[in-house]
Amino acid sequence: MILLDVSFLVVFAVGLALGLSELPWIRQRSLIDRLRPYTRQARPELAGATGQNGAFSSLRQVLGPVLSDLGAKGGRLLGIDTPVEVRLERAGSAQDPVAFRLQQVVAAILGLTVGSVLALWISPPIALSLVLLLGLPLLCALGLEQNLSSKILQRQHKLQAELPVIVEQLGMLLGAGYSLTAGLARLADRGSGVAAEDLTKVMRRIRQGVSDTTALAEWAERADLDSIRGFVAVLALHGEAGDLGSLISAEARSVRAEAHRELIESIEQRAQLVWIPVTVATLVPGLIFLAVPFYSAMAQVAGTS
Image (cartoon, rainbow, N blue to C red; front, side, top):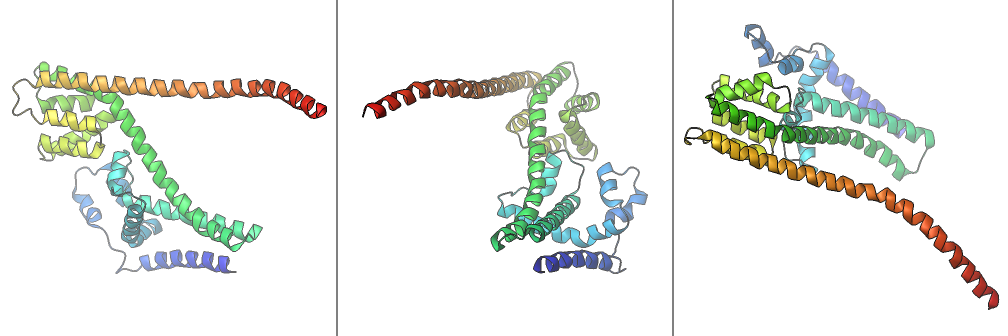
């Protein structure tokens, strides 16, 4: 009965939030919604994040700030100091922080429902019931955090792999007479990988009036890679260095050598993993063949004694 009461309380809380969200003094349009009719072209992620209507939009407006605050505090308890909006941007996701937190809440509610059903079905001890009611929702919410971290690592690996080519191409463009901004724009327009997406964001910031040095520094902070920081530090010298092309060529060789070293390290790790099944397949038959004469010798000693 306690489990059913908890489930009904959660459903009642969600229904109460949806009901209160329909009140005029709570349901207010955000600033982005009010300014959208006067903008020439809205960003796709903003259109997807704020162009929703109905109950889900109302739920976002009511529970969004609370969930964002609770999610930030929970992340700090788990050792995640980076804000969720920065992590979503690093993962290349168009999802906004409020939608991500709502997704975590939905996953936790589903986990609570499954845990309640299992607790009522198998009737475990109290300790196991608490694990099902508390651990399963927490596991579902943390699973989304882990999925986001995995996406960040995958995108960083792709960016690290594409960076040598980007550096070399930019060096060739600068050597051919392009300016830094024109070279970045050409790479952003002609490219199709993760680096091209980041350079597109850099060019968008430059067209908004931000200096190229500041836009590149924002890219380095967003990417969170030492190789990107070094590359941006070299590009920051374009106003002072007389021959930026040679500096970028040296940086390209350094990035290429670092990528080569990481590739060799990955190959060696995979080569070591290959020997694990080979070793197991060799040791098990060997132990069997050694056990047969050992057992026979022990039987003879036991028989003679």
